[in-house]
Length: 285
Ligand code: NAD
Image (tube, rainbow, N blue to C red):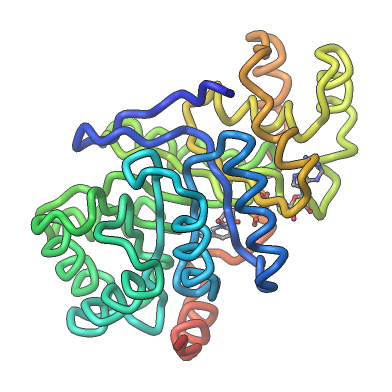
């Protein structure tokens, strides 16, 4: 079975550097198959969110897998409509009920929409009680992190942000490194929807290693010490995506990929106030 490296977070908790993201897995049988295939292939880290609507299925899949709780690393996120101290407390209880777990490995603020400081204070309490092993944020820019850290006690363990070869987040990465906050990449394959898979540089590198472009991109993330959890519901791709620990990109190849930066996001900008306000209106059950 694949030996997935761990990354040590700023509170000494170990997180598997590679896992499975389950955004947009909205059909139960598709979800259950994907999780089962992933567990069989050696995945032990799953990234979900209250917003994804599949926490309950994940709880069921974990039980049915027979895997020991301590073998797994489970992340969920508090949604934008649930910001605020009391709101976050009840959102967390709902998440735990759906997952049917005694503790959560990592809980994140999904987006920096209004009131994230109060949200964080509720998360800090669960963290101190041991019901959450690590707490972190997602889609936080440097200024959001500075603001949060100036007003609260616990430094986030991770920041989960859009990152792929066309949007590498170098400035934020440097800030995260300095502050001992781990970098998690969402959309590590650019959602599979753009020119990344036909990029000539990535294609050339993939051919020279006898790997796919997806594998080269994931390997690039791993060599930058980023935590990744690409999404797939296909057995063959799930196996392919985890099969990235038997080759290495050279310094020259890493430099070639560095040059692919475009400065353009594929998804929402965390500073887009209208997007944040609209998303905070979307209540989830
Ligand atoms: P991704 O970059 O992981 O791309 C997934 C898509 O790439 C798949 O749907 C498929 O079309 C394609 N793909 C996957 N493996 C492939 C392969 N081997 N060959 C060819 N195509 C392949 O995009 P994502 O799902 O948006 O991101 C991964 C995870 O990140 C999510 O599932 C979720 O857990 C997390 N995420 C978090 C946020 C956030 O705001 N915090 C936002 C988006 C996603």
